[in-house]
Length: 186
Image (spheres, rainbow, N blue to C red):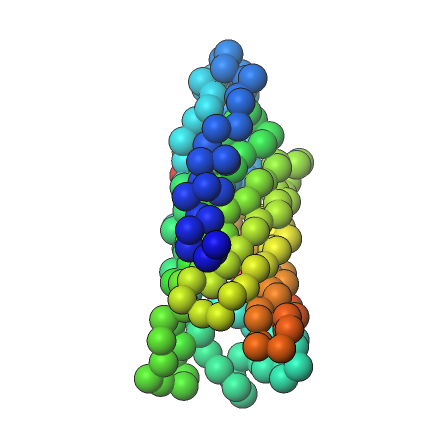
């Protein structure tokens, strides 16, 4: 079965997770941050984010560094389903365009995951796949630092470490990338 065929199954699995927190509880940090005291929200609650991503360096058989070897810029929209004031499922998509070495194909990454709010930061774990390339699978730990702008809007800085395993014809080749993200969560 191809990875593209598995995506609807993964999405259905995430959406069908039972949600016990249906009563009114304190408002979530939409991606991160803290909500004003006394505010109430029903769960599950819908939110999202929009930002950009910049890969800094990739460590693999051939290590590459931003500037010397490439310069890619990604657009990072996402849809977030808040299960309660701490836990959420985030459906993120990243379209990377290579700016330095052109012409080149746009890379599209699908990376849903689970995120948890802590005091002052958010941490999470995503699963990922690069669409249209050789067979691959990735795991992406993330850490998010929010700056609350209003009750419903945050600006965030995010550090990701995507680790991918890609079929190179004779086995799986591993790579790890340090990736910086920033944008707005709502």
